[in-house]
Length: 145
Image (cartoon, rainbow, N blue to C red; front, side, top):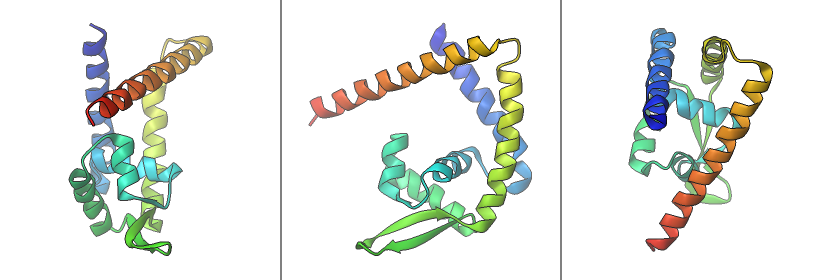
């Protein structure tokens, strides 16, 4: 049942975010990458793919859409001419503000009825679980090589 509930939460989150930013023409995968770039500006495509455990082609497609919309910029890495570093364009910064508002609203509903201690415990537990599954996937990746 736990996985079912997590799946439901993720689907609702996706629908909520897409509806909230529909007028900006930014889909959920694009929002996720913009959020990642907000705290990891100037990374390469490989770092994004590795973080989300997605194939480089899927990331490239989403980055192309973001670039066409003027939300990100690619700059050649001065240390490696074959690599582009991706950063948020000024127009993308504006969208981040709207995304922040949507996240605040989501969190108000998401944590409704929970105490501050409940929220801290939730954050602590989900951090542990995220670390555990990352370790498991790293181990499986190493075992398959």
